[in-house]
Amino acid sequence: MPSSQTNPTELPRFGWPIERKLEPRQPKSLTKAGVSLHAAGDPPLIVRGCRESSQSTRAFCLWITFEDQLSKYAPKGWGPPPDSPTPPPFSIQPISGCGRGMVANKTIKTGEIIVVERPIVVHPATTTMILHHPNGMWGHLEDIYEQHFQLLGEKEQSLYMDLWNCKPVTGTLGNQLVGIARTNGLYSGFTRTKHTPHYAGVYPKISRCNHSCGPNADAKFDEEKMAMTLIAQRTIPAGDQVTIGYTNLEAPYSARQDDLNTKYIFTCACKHCKPSKPSRPSRPLKHPYWCFPNQTTGEHVDLKAEIDASDVRRDQISHRLAGARELWADWLSPSSRQSDRDLLQFHEDALVIIAQEGLEWTRILDIAYLAHACAALEDEGGFRRWGTMLMSISGTQGDEGKSQMKTWQDWVREPKTSPAWGLRVQARGRTEGTPSRKGKAWHISFT
Ligand SMILES: [Zn+2]
Image 1: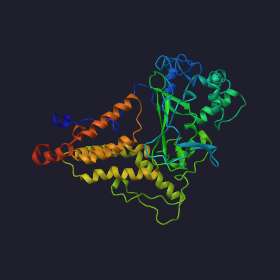
Image 2 (image 1 turned 180 degrees about the vertical axis):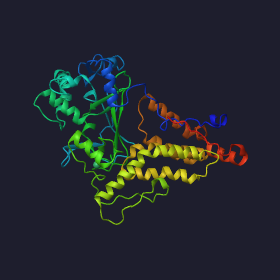
Image 3 (image 1 turned 30 degrees about the horizontal axis):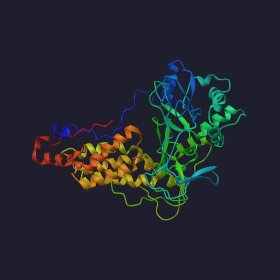
Image 4 (image 1 turned 30 degrees about the vertical axis):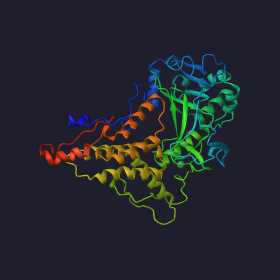
């Protein structure tokens, strides 16, 4: 029974993915993590050769970390490598002007797992003590890499040395090893820590993916298995590159280019940064939040106008959730004047704009809201349709992911048990039957 029936001023929680589990208390940003490390007396970095079991002789990964994490992860080994699709639906190929990249060798469907793999090296994305090394801020890490690299198996060493290095070269092995790590590192979070959860890992195949500001794949790290999963965010036709994002994709064009130029020494020329034709939504937009002035007409590409319009769309995408919360609180209020269509339109239009900008990794929230909206309207078929879509694209992992999937499977099987069931219908009923509640707004609890 929804708690709203016992206490009408509070809505039940909608659960994942709208509400995400709060992470343990830990520094959120790199800067805060650096401050926390300094406050802890600059704890020394230590190296662990990660093995599949305590009997394994060969390390599959060099894990450079702080001591507080050592006992918290796989003290007896990480277990066998996680399953990955065989044969792989891609190959690593030379890409004109972009070194080598990952190319689909068959059509890869939305939500499909492309590869699951473990890192070859992992190191903290921030430290403070490295600032005091005579060879500069990366000197200490260079010493550690040089000293311990041979712990890795021959195959891992050779895969690693074959990766691109865009960082300045001084000629030492440590400098080369750290340059490769900094060029190819992908965010890998280890949350059981008092220092920093922010690590970068280098992966044999996923680190080969080139960047796009509208990437067709997303990489998610599972700290239980110490493995990265690459998941298709939309259909990837055979022959297309599989791409990921190296920077904040909701940031405007100039900020993205600055960051990519500083960190990776390249200027992005993806279709969002250098369009060859005007970008248009796949269908007309109706909700006022998504109505943009000066939509380009005709076939002429005005680069500045296109980029300005893309910046506005990305800004709207990044701020839409605050708007969604307001719309929901209003819509479930007995005094709301918003129509059902208005609310659905807001999220349906969001999906169109998200696809236009190639930011599909963020659409699961709109799909969840659409499912809950159908439940609020007691529309079983609609809830099942959106709920099934949500499950097909979720890419959840680990024990928590299994529990999130189980919750949605149960709701889709029996929509009446979902948390928003009937809320809009009840709000309308109160408006008609109990005038004393008129004008009192509901409050949605979001975290
Ligand atoms: Zn771009």
